[in-house]
Image 1 (cartoon, helix red, strand yellow):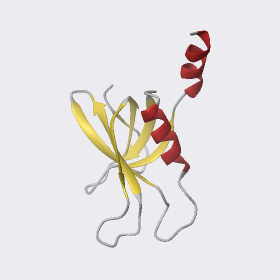
Image 2 (spheres, helix red, strand yellow):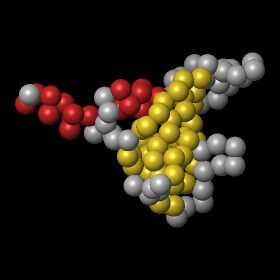
Image 3 (cartoon, helix red, strand yellow):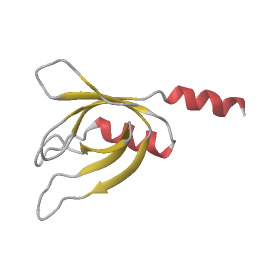
Length: 109
């Protein structure tokens, strides 16, 4: 699927499809922000999207998007996401996936 630009004040894009690659980072060079990075196909291109495990420095509340993205990747389920396109990195704003599709197929087998 090709990403679509959303018409709002931010530089947001919508993209749906399968996660082709996932990597976890536990802070780089003293940076306390833990995050994961995923790759998704955008037409013929591959884009990188960052998902921060925490909403900022030294926060104790985990980002719920992380669990959804990891589970979707492990279960090979497509996701639909909105990401903010920034010069340094694309940052995920929200994600949706339908785990019930996979569960209903498993029950029938």
